[in-house]
Length: 199
Ligand code: MN
Image (cartoon, rainbow, N blue to C red; front, side, top):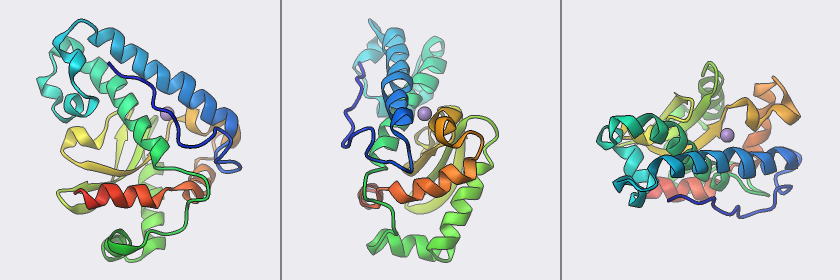
């Protein structure tokens, strides 16, 4: 069974980029709801002792009557757990070391990477996520719809941006580009680098 992870920082710690009320509702209501719905569906079944990563890595192994719930609500739990850790107060800037080099080589520099990531995230019609992933060691940009996760496509998420309106609407309304621009100031590259190192 899943439980809501504690944040490593206060709800107001990402101000002014991500506002306190958005953080608090997003974490205690939206994320909690994904967890509650997944737990309700899996309780008393053999799936209840599996990790969310195990379930999402092989969705075809999940019985058909539970698959959509796991995909949507298990996916929501997994994606949001990453999202919180991929941000932090006093973060932002540029990645260094191996990750910085890999991003520069792949995308032609950090600013080009930011442009392409933004285009990818903005290009997702409706609700979804923008991602930097490792596809068997190769960096790639991708987006997913709803709460689908790159993990289910055999790719390792490195950096994920929630593009659902609930993640931005209170402060940015429909101004998605402004939300993305602000979000770069809180990206936790140390955590992204840790994930990259394992791929
Ligand atoms: Mn969300």
